[in-house]
Image (cartoon, rainbow, N blue to C red; front, side, top):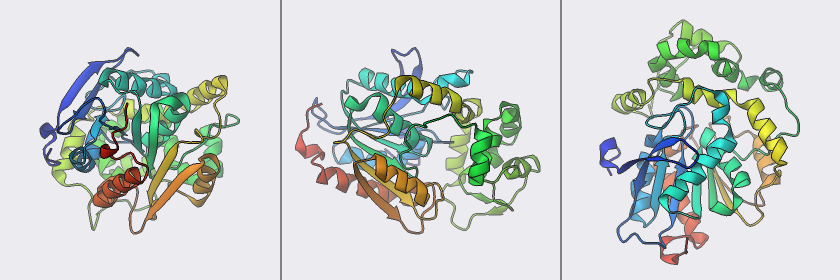
Length: 334
């Protein structure tokens, strides 16, 4: 498992009971058996399984099995056209089906960015499948009590303005035509001339093809960015996640999902203090809805915590699991 060589990981492709085909990395430790604990890693936007490249090896060497899929719409996984296919209920059902294919009953579930939001919903849709939950960068968000259109949300929270651009299907081709620049912006390799989170700014930056300023300390090499780009030639699937707001609300309302996570579920939140995603308000709301929440803020770290602070994230998760008696030597039966 060489983080610089994607082919050095063990890749699988399986047709799931949900009807979708998923590509995923399935890395087993030496001495793997039916008692081996499994970590399932769920990436965010715009990322692929490769976002976990620095964590997979160390976790496997500690005795865990690690599953890291390309989520729906990404890489080698199916890419349905309809945005409703990307609701978090359907994604959660896919992850449960992937665990079934892998022969895993209960799992340690870890997510980043959109993956954090998704694993939080998995914990509501499939609460019996979790041993522990880790969210990176994005705190747990409870289901909405009422539907609020995105445009109204942006009026309340202007920092969500970029989502208006991403959620509009008429902009898909525009983003694809400037995909390298878009990825450089998303990964912080290019510093824009204006805050790209505010309404209208991201589109202006993209359409004017701003070269921007290079990052002082880039978190990706050009080779890593090239690999991600090669796996994401179409951005329609990834953008569909931003087009599911009403579908998600209707599914969650129909199921009457609870606000809080399972009372006995241990949850770890790791976030960077330079990342506005984990705002004080979001953290306060998460603490109200997560009975067993442990929080670990990281100084001088931004949004891409598993890249910017790879050793810290890797080790923090391992130590936390050990404290929960979920280290491999505990021999937990799955």
